[in-house]
Amino acid sequence: MSALSVRQVRFRYLTLYGLRWLPSGLLMTVMILLMQERGLSLSQIGLVATAQGLVVLALELPTGGFADALGRKPVLLAAWLVGLASLSLMAVADSFWMFFLVWALQGVYRALDSGPLESWYVDATLAADPDAEYERGLGWAGTVIGVAIGAGALLGGGLVALGPIGPISALTGPVLVAAVLQAVSIVALLTLMREQRPASGPTTLRASVAQAPRMVGQAVGLLRRNRVLLALVSVELFWGFGMVTFESLLPIRLSEVVGGADRAAALLGPAGSAAWLANAAGAALTPVLLRRLGAAPAAALLRVLQGVTVVGMGLLAGPVGVLIAYLACYTVHGASNPLHMGLLHRQVDGPYRTSVLSLNSMMAQPAGALGAVVLTALADATSVSVAMLVGAVMLAVAAPLYLPAWRAGRAAARSGVAASGVGPVVPATGPDGSPAGTGPVAVAVSTPAAGAGPEAVGRVG
Image 1 (cartoon, rainbow, N blue to C red):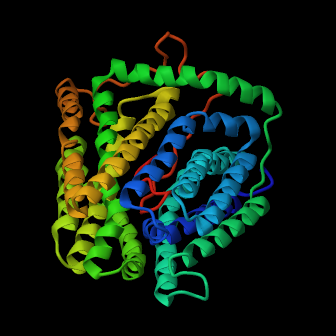
Image 2: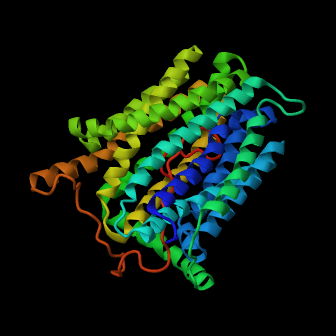
Image 3: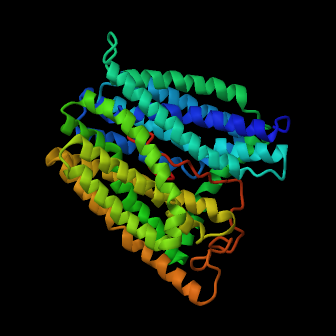
């Protein structure tokens, strides 16, 4: 790693980062519609989607330990190979159980992929220059992910618009291209990433696996001691449930108003690209919201506003109205995430920071799985619009959970605590009094993403 300069490390990181997310943009336009084309009902789609959430929930915390034990490159290579296997199976899947396996493999892929590339970038940058500012590259990664997924969405929409090519259906084409790009990503990973691997891999791996349950217990203990933190993490339960509306149900809703799945998929390409630009624009509004309203009040207001945008997607009659509501939803989404994560950061200090963030991410997984089952079943039994209205309510009712953070912030301001603090921070010790974060487990925080399909997470998770 030390042979590379800071600029070389940053270039390689951003290149690999863009290649990693490009296939996701392609899938965003077709995934749900493809499963419908292959004969799955909305209820079945909801059930197979639970496979990813459950797998990520089980593997989220240990993945950092695996990367520390085996090295970031081999874990990332394993993740991307699993992703390629998933895409290959997706291209030919034609039954409930085959798609269930596709989503389970995507869960393994996402869990293993969570963190190693970012960790390698930071370590390699500091190895090249201990005083280097690696935050700049992490910031640019936010631009890269938007461009990559937006470009993938446009490419996917264009491929669908071309129609069937021989025996390959219009909705299958983007999946095949995504698989090819995934293979290119693996070659690039082997070529660009240089790493000095840990010497004691197997021993550290066994220790990290044994340590994982203790880390989970300590992270849960933090929630018991801090009601502000508990309320913030609980927001994820409603957020994860409600995100099913604009990640999974929106393609179905759009196909209703335009009169066909292929036409909807063609529209979702440019719409998905525009949504990522709207997401970035929303994030740019964060400083203004902080100055005008404060973090907690702004976050609460945005929860209600996002529910309103989902109501628009469910009730507006034409494709123009549905897509405008969709873009508004992603604008709100982009503004919400930095506010929520900033409030979390202010509630924890020391080595437990990443543990709490991962626990926050994990809360969304079972909630999203439950939402996928409940809302798709409701859509089958009633209509997609009714299911979206229920999801909108779930998004909006999370708003009061920001009240403890708001009250703590006001109390801190009255007592003269620095404005950046919101309530008491969690001490960097475990529930048993031991130093926090000791042991080989290093919990990674995954990258925010959004869009329909098995890789969609919408937020940090």
